[in-house]
Length: 309
Image: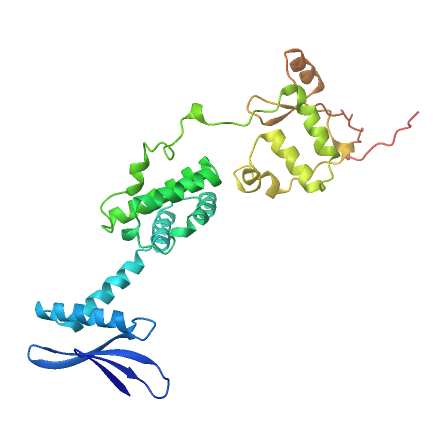
């Protein structure tokens, strides 16, 4: 069934499904033709369908076939959808991953940063205004933190750089925030840093860890972090890989007489009691451990039983 409105516009109703679509009939180059251009009411209401017909009439008057105009518009919309921030982020990221520019840890950090930019995922980059981007970054800076906002800004800059190189946009919008009073990169002296634990309270920290109600794995990890100065991810996945390597401690009766003391590089090394005593005289402050004298062994490396008396 077809209901006519006027000026070539009509509404066609399909009997089996009940679906409704707009039909436009017109004359171009002295030939009568027709085309559908959307459904009712999802795509066009009566008012917007009439506006669309007026648009087609103007294009026809300029010598442009409305059917071709519709096709070009659809292609433009499809192209626009390919240039959303989420699609460009995937393309820009994949390009760097394929080129070996990003490590696995950097990829993980990027995905965590990307979650904060969710409000602009589906917006085409060509329609994203500087004001909207700035408002989002300022909100992240206020609600989450300066560090996260700077990471989001860097990720957006990567996306815009990809878009510029591929001639999607003309300029990197993010570069305009270089001197923004809120979004500019903070100077080293302006960054508020957490104070380090005083040397005379290190023992207290370890006591609190040992006396805490946390499980042994957590206590072990906290001790490792304190001893080495490495981040959790570095301990687990980095070049040191201490936690993932699952080192097996030697039995107490096989331990050498050693002491572990922090070095200037915040690492660990083994020293003899004599070396430890000498370094303590030079001002070293470390966490002492009980020395265990190795038990004697025979030529076949078997323990020799001794009388405690």
